[in-house]
Every structure is written in C-alpha cells, then in structure tokens.
Image 1 (cartoon, rainbow, N blue to C red):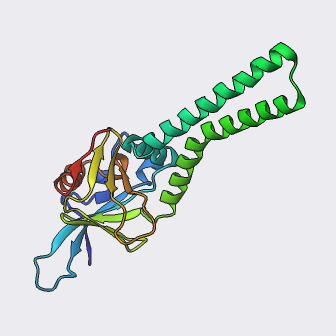
Image 2 (cartoon, rainbow, N blue to C red):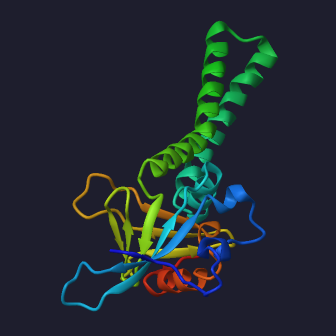
Image 3 (cartoon, rainbow, N blue to C red):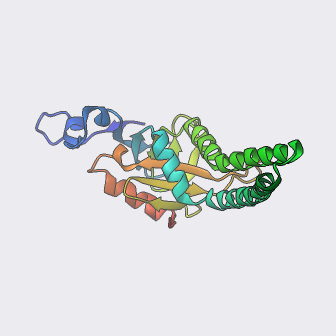
Length: 219
C-alpha cells in the first residue's frame, strides 16, 4: 500500500495546493486526502482509492441522520402518544378547575404531565444516542475504492455494489445500508462523509464512485 500525491513541478507542498483558500486553518487541518493503491489482490489490476480523514461534528451527525428519515416514523408515533396523554391530562385538569380536585386527581394529573414530557424528550434522546453510537463506530478514517469503502479504524468494509443508498445534500454524503444479515442489531448502518473533508480536486471522483455504487435516496 502506498500514498501518491500529485506534483505540479512547482516545488510547492501538494497539500497546500489542494487547500481551499476559503477554509480557515482549523478547517484545513480537519481533513486529509490521498490516493491509495490497492495491491492486496496479486492477480488483479490494482485499484486506486481515495483516503479521507474527517471527524463529523455532533451537529453534522444529528442533521444527516435526521435527513435520512430513519427516525421520523418512530418520532411521529411518540409525539402522537404524547398528545393523547396530554389530552387525558387536561381532562383531569378541568376537573381540578371545577371542584378543586382530590389528591388522587392531582397525582394522576402530575403523572400524566411527566409521562407526556418524557415522551416528547424521547426523540431527542434517541438521536443523541445514535450520534454517540456513530462517533464510537470508527468511521473517521476511510478509503473509497470503486467497489467498496474500507474503514481504517474499525477494519470494517462497506460495499459499493448497489446494496446501499446515497443521500446527497449541500454539506455531506450520507450512505445508508440495511442491517447486517444474521445480526442481533437490526439498526440501519450509516456512513457520513462531509464535503468539507474532501479537497476540491478529488470531490468529483469521490462523488462519482459513491453514486455509481449506491442507489439514490431522497430526503
């Protein structure tokens, strides 16, 4: 395996040439791209992959997971349940307004308000848990090949054979894969690649490989 950088012959650092003038120094240090040769297959033509290093922020992870729509149906169900509980709580509240209410009615009213609040907070908790799970998945360093994506830190691999879906937004590429076969974990698998992690000259190649190996997904 080796890394190969383009050299224009000017003597300048290739990383400095690829840097986006519009990025701040902190943003420029947040990403690194390189061409990586895949020579693991002795009898096949070597493939050229693009190595990326990027750590999505919590805000980026939450926003892109939400845009996939995987949590929306569950969120709508929870909100509906919270509305039902609140309507019932207002019934008790009207009784309290009319007759002052007994301790039992007050207790039921307070409990139902607590349950409704917990239900309304559940989608935010779930999204934060998914964000934490993603940050611990080891997807910060990866190499994109025409037929797969290798996750350097976790040693995992995601195929680019049409089994996954690609959600393209102005800020990121999000790949969505079905649950692993014969696995107890039935949650979807995500891979989030913010566009800021890819230098401008390599962006068209990365986008082309991702689009060719996946199915499009709408927000």
